[in-house]
Amino acid sequence: MKSWANLAIEKALARGATYADVRVMDIRHRDVSTKNGQVGRASESESLGLGLRVIAQGSWGFASTDRLTREGVEACVAQAVAIAKASALAKRHDVVMAPEQPCVDTWQNPFIKDPFRIPIETQIGVLLAADAEMRKVKGVTLAEGSMSFRRIDQLFVSSIGSAIHQVKMQSGAGIVATSFAGEEIQKRSYPNSFGGQHMLRGYELIEELDLVRHAPRIAEECVALHSAAPCPEGKRTIILDSSQLGLQIHESIGHPIELDRVLGMEANFAGMSFLTLEKLNSLRYGSDIVNVVADARLAHGPGLGTFAYDDEGVPAQCTPIISSGLFTGYLTNRETAAAIGQPRSNGTMRTESWNRLPIIRMTNISILPGDRKFEDLIADTDDGIYMETNRSWSIDDRRYHFQFSTEIGWEIKNGKRGRMIKTPSYSGITTEFWNSCDAICSRDYWTLWGTPNCGKGQPMQTMGTGHGAAPARFRNVKVGVASSKS
Picture 1: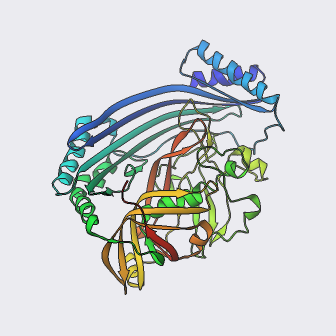
Picture 2: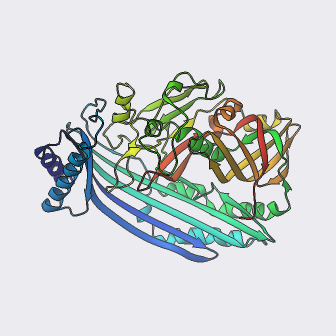
Picture 3: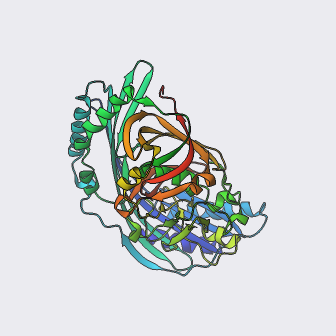
């Protein structure tokens, strides 16, 4: 890896680049899934290549190759520099980057069991066992399970003198029970919807999730939802479980704080942002108890947004995003940090693969825990709804108006959790919603959830992000019934 990277840097500078960085990445991926007692997918792939970014004549150029020979690397360099010089013909100004110190380091996230050393037959066996447990429950018409593992071995080298080797091991799994009855479709997922839980850990995560043990419960809840009461309509107090709150953070805080969206440098796939520059340090984003950070450090937890250095060689950091309700920080790279006068990037440049240009991505965007016990939160609520596990969502292209529905809910009356509610939904305006938060559960209830498939960019890149959250209560929120026909 190192010889190819050094060759790319040397040749880029010789061709007139004033800056260059290169990522050599070896990515191994395993996907396993089952459906109604059958193996749905059992695949494994590996991808090795090099991606080169250069600045020449004040503009960016990027090229990549999987032809890791001297001829292949030199052709990649020639293309990247040529693109930069062509881009310079239409530039408005030269690229300026916030300064960063060179760094030489190696890092690997800790894990106990290498998932690629676990026989794929063993992993399929776990999913089939959970599948069988779900289909034992009368009324379940579709049982599904999946596991996904990714090992990223990456060397970053830049012309300022950085040489950083990182290895990241990612594991995840989840199961889903679905029931069709008449025109109604209900489903329950464990431990989260849309693929379950994913973290920067080894196979020990899958064992801890204990999919087989939880399968009967979610299957029974799935069938019971057909007989559950519809969600009342109007304004109510709601309590969100930590997984739903994690997605709420992702969509209504994580995406809006990406500074490339704010500056109009990125609008594909998920739109731009309402968080224009004058709102920094002046917007009341949430109530006084709302504190949100962007934290890529391992000390925050083994989330999908955890690393030692981003893809510009900037060390992992913790950035306050919302401090006691006040909006205090964006996600930046070296270029956008310089554009708004910040002395240093807070390290959020990430790329899906060696053949994609790094862009600003969420790291671990987490709401810090409060001081309440979950049981006390319920007991302290006279009339409300507890909602659990996302089912669907919609948000506008500036991340201001939103609507979410969850798989299941429970009515809360006079401090007690009561009858089950089907397909509850809630909607609102981002800042009004976060300002309505009046209670957050403590660290004992806090989970760092992994979203493995956040999409952004053109061509679209998927990225893993992390969101730490504990159940929280929100007052005077508009609620209603989401469609259960699809």
